[in-house]
Amino acid sequence: MSHPEAPRINLWSRALRERFGGRVQRVALDAGMSCPNVDGTVTTGGCIFCDASGSRAPYAQPALSLRDQLARGIERLGRRFGAERFIAYLQPRSNTHAPAERLRAIFTEALDHPQVVGLALGTRADCLPDAVLDLLAEINTHRPVWLEVGLQSASDKTLRWMNRAHTVAQWREAVDRAKARGLFVATHLILGLPTDTPADGLRAMELLNHHGIDGVKFHMLCVDRHARLASLHRLEPLRLLTREEYARAVCDRLERLSPDTQVMRLVSDCPADRLVAPTWLADKAATLRLIDQELVRRDTRQGSLLAKATDR
Image (cartoon, rainbow, N blue to C red; front, side, top):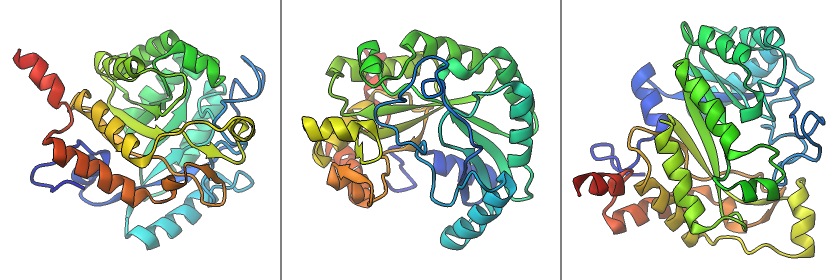
C-alpha cells in the first residue's frame, strides 16, 4: 500500500499499531448468535448475500467455548502474523441480538485472555437497544470497544432487495445513540449492488461523514455458493463489477470520505471453495495494488474532494 511517510488512506491497522505499539490481530469468534431477519423477529430468510454460517471464520466453531476459540485463534494467528496482541471479534450474524445480561456474560468471556486488548462486534441497527449500548459503553471505559453496525447501502430500495429488513433511518438513529455514548462506530458498505445508483454511492459517503462514523469496511458484492444469491445468479447472472471498476469505485468513495474515518477493509474475502463470482476476488493482493495504483494515478487521497469543496 502507500508509503508510510505520506499515507493516502487512514488505515485502521496503522492506527492500531500506533495505539498498542505493535501488530494487533483480530480473532474471529462465534458466540452462537442468531439474526432478527433469520429467526423471525422481523422476517426470515436472512440477507440475500449471507451464507448460513454468517460468514464464520473456519477456526471459530460455536461448539467450542469462546475461551477455546480464542486460544485456537491466538495460536494460529500469532504464529502466522507474529502478533502478540489480539482483538476478540464477535463476527458472524448479529452479536447484540440478545438480552443485555446474556451479552454481558458473552463479552466478559471474550475478553478473558491476557493478550486480548479489546472487543469488536458486528451487529445491526435494529439490535441496539439502550440497555445494550449502555453495557458496551461500560465495557469501553476500561477496554476499547469497536462496534460495527452494518448499513450496506444508502438506498432503502436496495435494502429491500437484499432482504435487509431495516431502513436507512433505523441505521441513522442507532448510530447516533451509539456515538452519543462515546463508542467507536464503524459500518459496512457493499459496492456493485445491482439496484444501487451512482448517487446512492455518494449519499452513503455523506451519511458516514454526517454521523461521524469512525470506521468503514468496503465489500464487493460476491456470490457465495452457500447464500441465496447463488440460486438467483444461476437463474439470471448478475452483472458484477470488474476488478478495475471496483478499484475506481472504492477510490471515488475514499475521495469523499472524511480523513478522520479509519478504513478497516478495502475489499472483502470469500473462501475459494465457496466463491462463485467474481473470480477476481480470490486475489485480494492484486485488488489492493490496483486501488493503490488508482490513487497514485489520480494523485489523490482519502478526503481530497472534501478538502477542495471546503477551499471553495
